[in-house]
Structures are given as structure tokens and as C-alpha cells.
Length: 463
Ligand code: URA
Image (tube, rainbow, N blue to C red):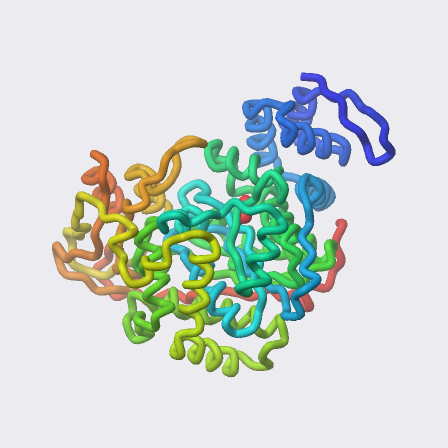
């Protein structure tokens, strides 16, 4: 298809989408005008999904260099508005995860960070591939709304110190459309596409700084240390070129985080965390607690709220113990039109009809978990999407407490699957098969694998 695009100089160019797809298919570099043409015309509804899907697959397979990624990010940003928080004097810091299984950290972290004095304007995502999405989890709260105009978003952040909303037609619509398409075309795990998607959302939010939780492992989009390093450096460099401070924490995603997986169940676990009911001594929750504390601490350090990690941890303990973080969460739910009674009445989140035990028929030690398989089992039972407009089942999910290193008996139950459709048994079997058992004891894995800080990455970009 042939369309017109205006260059920065106002020159109208005729371009052929098929030629651009073919160029990327042949490993060639796209020009800034070609990238601009694709993004602008796709957002305007002038290029069909099937052509952009083909281009995304070509980018997925053949990559983009730094310059192409930078231009893609800037075209995403230009597709909508950039928020300016003139009335907020607190540091504006956000956290973003590259996506994992059971990752409900944003829902816990934002009220805690806000109670500690950070303003958190969070534009988040829906489920992507086999990973769950913060927005889907929040929408399991009856009435909860995520779609707001830039002015409303500003108001929400100014009022309560934080808000979590979606990309909209005004806020990075390019990411809104392309993110949804990537989800259903198996084109998520691409370094340039992830970089543009994350950095553009964060620039549009008007933040000063960002902590990225880059997930690495079987439940993540990034599976090797080399790729994790490449993506970390890319995020930091592109952030730097847009004048934003970005630090990256590489964390282990070889096992689902915490116990709950699935929208409503993850909301319950998040509320329990904020109520102070998850014990650090309970090994099922160690990963969730440790990582949440670490990421909030990074935000507090970045925002100069504290000088040491120890003072950050004491501050976090305090706002959980005195109920301020929970109160922040309550006001947040009210402000975004959700029913705050869910905090005391979990039945409002719905209850699945079937509860199927996940038992392991072998004695030994859990040595590996294929968390992606668990994420895919969630899609089978309706907790995630198969197509663009799939309707989610918010009460479907699982509670899995078996962790790598745990010793288990033959036929021990290591979790339950909750569902309403006919895929329960098949999905439970898929989860059972995701657990690998050995006879010899297995060491627990390190949770925080590496930290990349902006100041440590010296070589400049555009190369
Ligand atoms: N999170 C995002 O916002 N975008 C991606 O592409 C992956 C994770």
C-alpha cells in the first residue's frame, strides 16, 4: 500500500509498506523516514494489522541498530502527548518490569514508594505473551478504570501521589496499538521493540528517573545473560539520550514470583503484602518481598529520599507497619473508580468454580521450573489473552508455592489451579510437567542477578 508521510521538513513522501517490510526481511537498516512513516500511518489506521505484523516479525528476527531503536522510540513518543507535572515537587520516579509470571510488584510498590515520598506516575501494560499485565490485574477489581486523559492522569497523581493507567489514544497510542499486536503475533521478545515500548511510555509519563526490573529466566522474555546485558545497556543509553536517569536491576524469573498467578489472585496477594501479612520468614514469599523492597529502595535512593539501602528498608517497614501504604492503595482504588471494599472482602474479586491440585508424583528436589509453560497454562484457562479482544476470566489462576531448591515428597501438592473452563485438567498437567525434580539437593538461586547503573555505563550512545 502506498501512503503519504510528511517529513520533518514538511516534505510529503510516497512510500511502499511492502518495500519497507521486504527491506527489514533482508536485514537492511530502515531510514528515520521509513520508521516515521510506519508508526504515523499505523496509528492513523492507514496501514493494516497484517502488514505491521509482518514488519514486527522481520524486526523480531533481524533486529534494529541503536539509531533505528532511537528513532522508533522517538516516533512512539511523538505519537501522543508528554505529561508535565508542574505542581509536584516530589521526585517523579517509576519502576517498570519487562514482564514475568506472578509479577504483581507494581501494584505493591507504587503505594509503598508513594507513602515514602516519591510521586509515581505509572503507565503500565496489559498481559503480554505468557506474562501477566498490571492493568489486567487491576481491572479484576470491580469498577476499576485504567483509561484516563492526560489531564485526569495528572490530577490523579497530584491527588494521591501515584496512579496506574494504560496507554491511550493521547498517551503513546503507538505503543498501545503495537503492544497489543505484538502480544498476539509472538513478537514480544525483541530488544528494540521492548526498549521503544518501555522508554516511550516512561518519557510520556514525565518522570525524572526510572528503575527497570529486567526479568531473566524461564518465565521472562529474556533468557540469556548476554541479552539481559544488551537490553539493560540499550535502556540506559536510550534513556540517557532522552535525558532520563535509568537504572536496571536484572532479577531471576526462573520461578513465578510469590505464590499467586492470575489477575484476581494476584490482587489478593498484593493486598496481603500491604497489610503486612506476608512473612519474610515464609520461604514462599521471600522472592516477592526481597525484590519489592530492593526495587522501592532503588527508587528512594534515585529520588534522594534516603542515602542508604538500610534507611530505605526501615522506611518501607514503617509505612507498611503503620498502614500508610495500605491507605494509599485504598485511596488509589477509590480515585480510579474501583470498589475499595475488596481490601476487606476478597469475595468481590470472584471465585473460580474448579480447584485442581498440582501434585508431583516424584520424591526429590525441585531443580527447574518452566515458568513460561505456567504462563501459557494461564492463557488456556482464560487468565491471559489468545487474541486481541479475548475476554479475561479474572478469577482464573493458580497458587503455586513450590520453589527451586524445595524438597518434596512423592505426590506432594505444590499448588492449586483455579478455573471455570474445561481446560483445567490439561492446564494442571501442563503445570505439573513444568516442574523438574532431581534426587540430589539443589541450591536456591540468586534473586537479584545484576544491577546496571547509569553512571557505570560510560560509553556514549548513537553507536
Ligand atoms: N513491557 C513493556 O512495556 N513493553 C514491552 O515490550 C515489554 C515489557
